[in-house]
Length: 306
DNA sequence: CTCGATCCCTGGACGC
DNA sequence: TGCGTCCAGGGATCGA
Image 1 (tube, rainbow, N blue to C red):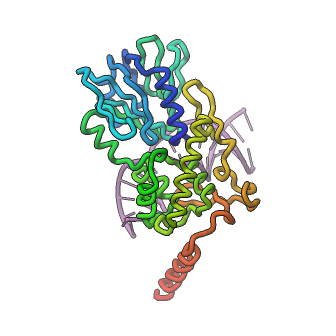
Image 2: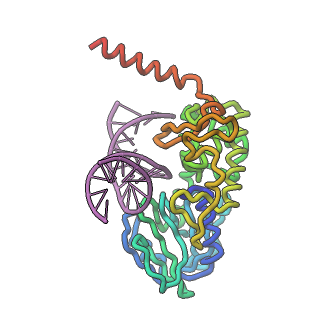
């Protein structure tokens, strides 16, 4: 499932293989994952791809503006004045193919390129998203997202995490807090930092927050080096699977031994997502059990009143 | 503000 | 072999 390292892998692949190419034509098949299919059909043909960058879990295919005006570079180098935003969802992929290669059943968008190849967007589940955005609309859209995990400094990270009472797992997954972290890397960084996923962000000490930030960045960098995690079907632009799944310490390891203490890794649902953690290294927060007790007590008293 | 529930969607695992 | 069922999950949305 594409999270930051997987999207980075794809973006780098595309930067190397399609940046500078011109889109000759666009063929749309299913379009229900697009903000505005007509805009894509209207704006993309004839446009040159300036560069491809990752922004959170999005890929930004920045387009050379028609006027030839200079690009506006925002924080982290992202944000040209016109771009195609592509989110890979759970099963999306964007990669160049030879035109004679048979179309996948789930290839929904085909960009014919000026070198004879085709840039194809393939996504069986269509949880992805694609949108053409420009100018103020693009800038506004990008502002909805939080800090870049690889660049965020200690004070901002601490402010974003410790300033909320939501559970840390929910905060890590919230794209308005940090852009790009998903379920795998949230669990891996929490395991590394020894923090329970259900702990309130506000209850993290400054030290814990900083340990978490460092763990997250180290894990993301390592995962990018290994071209991401391939759980079911993620492959890069050349069809090669990532290798970071071989280094997972928590994610997907329910019932297996914790590499640090030997206890059995558990799986619980936090923020609606499977969360894998070590019950010994990542101690349950104060209040986690008493809260349950309180709920039961409340239910009992409620029932007895009836 | 924060929560859980629900929906979107398909393929893969599993049981029979 | 084939069928039904369940589950995976990022994100939007809604009601509590």
